[in-house]
Image (cartoon, rainbow, N blue to C red; front, side, top):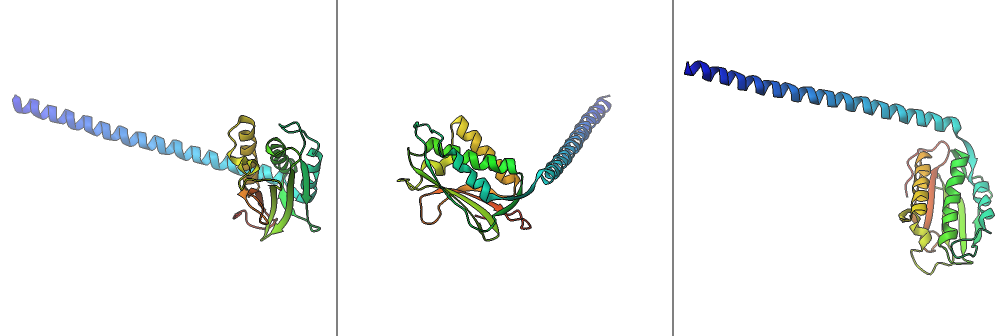
Length: 207
């Protein structure tokens, strides 16, 4: 009697253990199936976004987009005084393949941030050029006394409005295969640089 009860107990323990293992395997299988479905959905979403971007994109010349920033020259910043704009564009086209409205939004958000943080009457230089297979736009405060002025810390902005604008600019740059980051130019103080691939170039943009 004792041995039969012991055998039954062992059988029950083994069955419970086997059931636990099978349940664990089943949960892993379900998790893998869910993860696979999620990955496929994300890939499909990425393809839809890429197709939408291609549909909405067209050849753009950054020069008139940069030049249009002059319209902000009379905008009053937090100090109540406007800043000056020094626009530098080459004679040659600075071409990118992208969405005009998004590129305009990126450029204007940086310029508007500059009007908020730069000193009254200071000059914001915005230059566009083609460099090493990339379209480059650079913003810098020509009157900055600090090696790392507030303009250069745009991407580190913590205030709600500045933070939101910075994240939007990063997303737009990324959607166009480029990036925006703090960097010096022409021996000046630290500023902001936007790099985008030229049409036909790869979307990997190095600093």
